[in-house]
Image 1 (cartoon, rainbow, N blue to C red):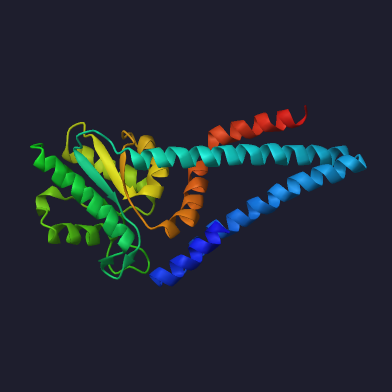
Image 2 (image 1 turned 90 degrees about the horizontal axis):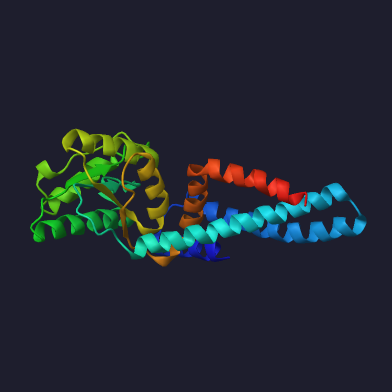
Amino acid sequence: VLSGCSLFALQRRESLSLRPRHFFGVLAGAVLFFLSLGSFFLSEFFRAGGWALFEWSGRLLTLFLFYLYAIFFGVLIVSGWYAAFPPRVEADCIIILGCALYGRNLTPILKKRTDRALFWYRRQIQQGKRPPLLIPSGGRGADEPISEAAAIRSYLIQKGVPAEHIRIEDRSRNTKENMEFSFSMAKQQLQDPNCIFATTNYHLFRSALWARRAGMSGWGIGAPTKWYYWPGAFIREFVGSLYVTWPIHGAAAAVLILLSFL
């Protein structure tokens, strides 16, 4: 229900052309709701009928859903912690994660990400520290006239950042490649760089997982966004984090199957 309300508010207030990914949160929420109802009623129905195989399937589904909900709220708590407590480190470089453009202009979400990185950049300079290298990261989508990285670079220069403080990474197509390609570029420019990344607050946790996979510290700074972006976007982020950590969840699934026999 919350995902549906947020989707309606997103379309009404932002006048966006809705894409399939915008409906993912609503569909995922509906699937979980009906699975939760089904796990209870099916277990009771087959238990009353004495159908052992289906009763076992009901127990397994119940354990699976309990595990899934536990992980969901765990990711929600950790994501909130990441958003509430930004890193207290001196950054050698700040990677700015790209997202969709409006023609050649930054979307409100991408502008906030870039402004967040710009705030951190200026704060370090004001503290008398070396200015961090800014790495806008993001390739060119099929419907974009320029790469996301190039659009971010233009915006940074308009805001007064010297061109020599910017290096663009314009090959990446997803968060995994954002981290890998940008960190590789940072290591070519700096010796043993301490890199952080700037993204939207709901995107911090999954980005941190990919950052650690790439060899970075995993520290990120999150830009705030309006409430109606959160429900659907966070469900996508949750599913994405499951994908990143799938070996752990595969082992957990094996344990759940064993427990379902008890």
